[in-house]
Length: 197
Image (cartoon, rainbow, N blue to C red; front, top):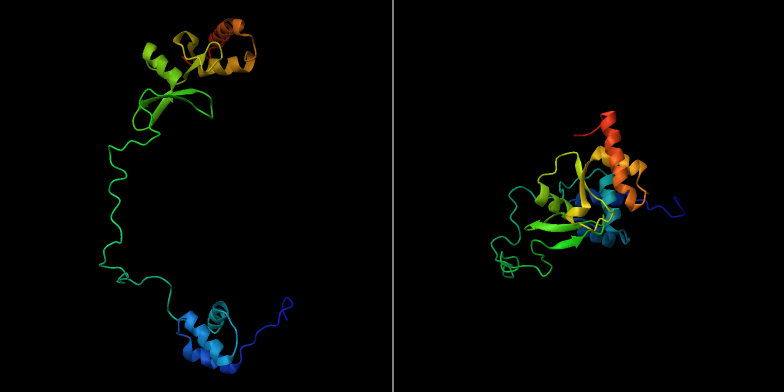
């Protein structure tokens, strides 16, 4: 007795019958076994019994090479979907180039610069329009600290090293002292020779 259940024992007559009929499909084999021996075994039980006896059917459940599908040569029941995704179809939520959005993750304003879906940070686009390329190791910051104020007068290009020192030492100072703090950071990095330029 295992787990409070009575264990089913297969008789020698059942084993002999299984050796003769094991090639039947599982459903037919189960029905025939239950009918012959007046039992209520499931297909899982019969499959396990067949496996325990070491009887293999040779069926793997896979299609053999050269198998012809049941629907070979028939045409489909429906017409093909030829009109849904045409090139001239424009989705309802499409935004034209020049559209702006505020990103929900970082809070910056993004502007659409190319189709189909290329967006860039607005403050970087404005800086490039006025002053040209931003080199590697340089970032654009906001003088007043407001990331939604993308006026060119509010933008400033600094190195990543300057940005790191400024954020570490002067991040909580009042707005009127920020230009002085930036000058101190630039001077300090120039003296120590750590400038990224």
